[in-house]
Length: 126
Length: 156
Image (cartoon, rainbow over all chains, first blue to last red; front, side):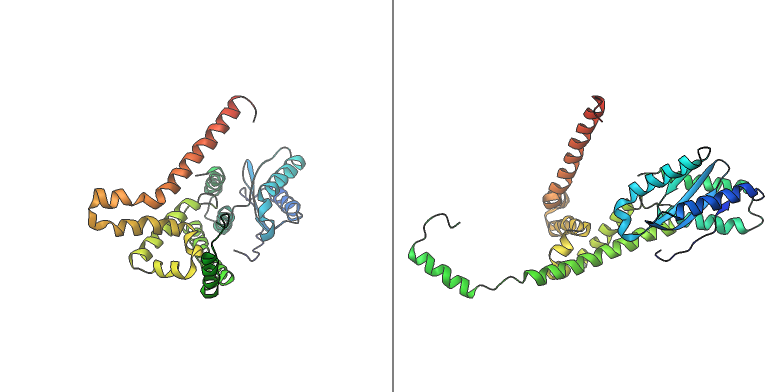
């Protein structure tokens, strides 16, 4: 919960070096923000999911931080769609998806489906 | 109080009273309330993380089941007679979190059980907590109405 996991950035398309590179770049970009720690990035087929934890004393500014990161990323990479979230559940799910993706039998289609499910979490409000 | 002129007897009595009255240990009470209330909130936080780890709830949506679970816990504690002792020890620390609300509903329900289900339990359960619910619902209605009107007029 509190300690840093620092997961590697990943991409749903396994053999696309471009996607991996992009995910890595985005991770570095987001990590530069001082108010947050522990960034997880997953590049899907269409979207890029960015999950992070906010430093405790900065949690009052969570909304502002999210907006800033989203705007920064969208300005830098106008072609991509970003889903930015500080929600802990989304962070857990990203770690779980990464664990599954390590398995060779877990197909790209499955991981894309699971990613879509995580993205649905972001939209849920009640 | 104190506006009217007191007779000499009353003043004398006031002095006597002040000599014998125990001082309220405000600081100690605050500390107790802080610790016990904090413990209740810690349990609540643990429950909310439980819902995040083992069920499909996000930080946003875990609040509702957490509140329900905390009320369930306070129901059990009230029924077994533990919550009264906590309340006596901690005061506001046990009354302000949602568990205090649950306690006020459930203890009233238990107390009036002998008067029957409809007139006893049904009639008295919400005597204390009903105002909380009513006030919450009404103020939510009022705020939503204002917001809807403002959006309709194009202010927001």
